[in-house]
Image (cartoon, rainbow, N blue to C red; front, side, top):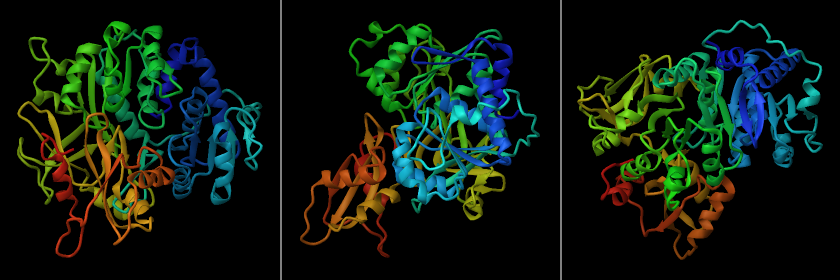
Length: 523
């Protein structure tokens, strides 16, 4: 299937039904489908070929997501850019991944106008929600598509055409572009459709509370394929999402553990909100506390659904289904089970390998490796990096783990230094570059440390120049300015000297050991 087919399947079966709801405004499948066709036809009329890189700079918004559907309908490639990213990070991604079409909301027009001279590759600027006079050459979406037909364009689609280039990071701190295709994203959707228990005529209600540029967008596709409804929450406000669950009888949604912890901190939550409609409360993107998971099962019911994936194998390497959170007697499962990420998904092969690329016996620890249609096509314009990660048909995830006697996958550590804080990837070298720019800093190391709220918190360990003094908050503020609040350290420790190897390399493993010594996990 082409990626747009997942929306069109629901459109054909439920044309007058509500595909999306935002701020009590209902958008029918007909309305969204026809607008996405106009967008696709406008792109094709301007001569943009397949796999043209396009981006939408916006928060959670139905009209913004309709633009994503429109560019997919034209068999173009979506570059997700986060509304909460720093302007410089988004500029880098748009430039490095050769963006040619940018859709944006008026709220970001001033920032985009400042960046425009640094983005010479963008040929078309489209404001989703009106006119943006400060952005040279821009046009409003409605004016741009007003004369376009609402008919589906007939295009030949190859399943290996690239339809997403998503930014990730690396050891140098510069984001790589992960190329996912119709094939890999359809496999992601198939995993969710195979795993759910919806009846043939049952229409789910999906709550898009997390960023649609992160996880919630892709998770909306299986829902709309069944003719279901996606309720879009425009602000990261727990009160809004809690109110939406009983109001719209939400059946499924995803949140990272850090947000779940915030919900669990609300007194008498179980008595305040009716959660009876929930079938799947999905969590992932970061490790979740077993104790918090038990509390979540008690609060929300036996509906928790864990998942494990990465950008290179989107979102569905393994699942821990709701029933697997319970034992045969219906009681909460063992800590061993709850600490797993579930069993590998059916449309992939998952094995544990040693450094020589040999498959290890069940129960032994090594690198988690995956093969199958879920796996990315490669990194954009980075064949050397692609060759390092895709070896003999296997994706080397960089995660260390094992598969237990019951077939459950456990992640115990990471080969790479990446930090997952609140469900977002943070690459230490990127933060270190900012810290090194301060004149008082001699050297530094950024690591993830255990945090009850965030799963992992970003910590900077800093060695100052002789005679220098600086307040930790000044360094944190500097990182927030350059990188945004997600990547900024939550705390800074000052040391006389960082631990180093004989050749002078900072030993992050030794640093991390100090903070993880009293925990059962190293991730």
